Amino acid sequence: MTADAFQLYGTHSLERPPVRLTAGKLTADLTDGNLRTIRYDGVEVLRAISYLVRDRDWGTYSPDITDLRIEQGEDRFEVTYRARCQGPDETTLVIDVRISGNQDRLDFEGEAISGTGFETNRCGFCILHPIVGVAGSPAAVEQVDGQIAATRFPDLIEPWQPFKDMRAITHQVMPDVSAECRMEGDTFEMEDQRNWSDASYKTYVRPLALPWPYQIPANQPVRQKTSLIITDISRSVAPSAAAQSSVIRLELGTRTGTMPDIGVIVTPEESEATLAAGSLLAEIAPRERLFHFDPDAGHGPDALKNFAAIAALHHGRSTLEIALPCKSSPAGEAAGIARQMQIAGLRPDAILISPSIDRQSTPPGSKWPDCPPLEEIYAAARAAFPGMRIGGGMLSYFTELNRKRVPSGEIDFVSHCTNPIVHAADDLSVMQTLEALPFITRSVRAIYGDKPYRIGPSTIPMRQNPYGSRTMDNPSGGRIPMANRDPRHNGCFAEAFALGYAIRVLDAGLECLTLSALTGPFGLIAGPDEPVEQGGRRPLFNTVRTLSALAGAAWQECVSSSPSEVLSFVARDAAGARLHIVNLTSENRTVDCSACRPADLDKQLLLAPFATAVMPLAD
Image (cartoon, rainbow, N blue to C red):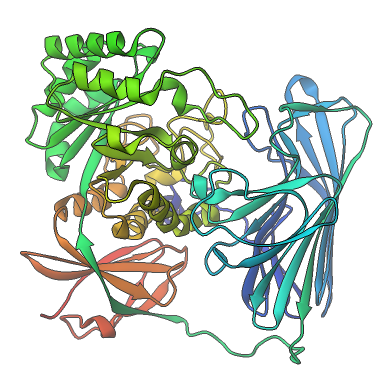
């Protein structure tokens, strides 16, 4: 509870440190009743095993945990507890949990019972496999009828479930070591969570094709069990003694490219505040201003007038992002917006248009909502906005773009967003989403080739929930999935996340990357109701200003010996070559830059938690 914690996270509340459970070579971290970072001989086997309960909007309950008991022996451990969820209308759900582990097996059992009946979209186990080193690798899937299929984890991101009707899945962890994950008590299936920028494949209970929300009947127990079974045919019985170096090494790589333009999104609700902060907008000098326009939300001529005034502040380009209602003729709706723009004096350089209904996800097994053909919508846009570039894609996330692929030949550029708190909002999960970004951009390129490509706005807070009726309010400033405000947006955490994001998407050859607004809950400066000094700059301001200044510069990859902890790249422009580095962790990290030929004599750099650094390089 220190000022330093507030500077890092935008809140004085710190996550409780996990409890490390150990049984020989097998280790797992116990966090809030669930298991994270399950390793065998130091190698991550599973990212998590969690017992989760979700509400009708796919929000995750944070149950009250009581009667927690942890027994730790030399070669075994056991955990028991009781979790209680409080639902609407005084409904309750109680889960009794037992976790046990030995040298080659881990069992996680849960029995849920409600005395009142309980509504939920999902109740039971989620098992996460990591993606780095696993994507594209072989797997054996046992189905509920006992048949076993030899297959592979998807390499490019699967829009739908790669595996269904699952009872178990086995994969190789390292030479001579395999891991079987077995699920009992219901039918499981897997989804490719990289769709949502989660760094995992998720095996979850209850097929999505079944109705949801559904009711857990009163006084009827629901029993489930997940087991991880390790097969190690090597002769070693003790954990590896090899210790990894605490110093992270950086080396210049061979890949190069051009830095993208940086955008800033402006909504009608924040347009007046953005106008008032025009000098700060000029200081950042984004090459793109993305104006959001949604007639269904009441946006009209006044919003367009404010957008025109903001567009006149400096000479950057602008794009109008339109959520087209599609309640009447697309041609008539687009023409109506064009007339309002003409009256307002707004002439953007591009239009990004998408049916409003497509912001909502259509899950597997669900009926697609009525919507005019996308070809009709793009034709209407070209007729209404002659001489402007027309972009398509999704105003929501890559998930929706992957499931409803817009016709490439009809658009001048493709765009989508991402959000790191769709499924989990703890600090580790949020930073781990950066691992998924190269898979997302590579999947987009596999679909759209060299089509000009934009991403954003992509922020830690969620601007719109495609999976429910609302985003989650967060008045107490917690770490909440799908929240429309997130305290870490105010801290150095967001600054590190944004720079890490930009580094992870360099290979995509983006035309534009948008990581923030200027004002409001997604902004670079805080308002009077924000928990920082009134009108103060959030740390994120520094990263966005730096990236904006680098637009069009040449970049060169820099390979990190531990990319989950430290990322970097080299930028070259008229000012010379500079090494940009970011620490993605909450601990100090020592970085060896000697292979990158720093201009000064310091070959090692000590990076504070979530800190960024810039180092000039020798010619």
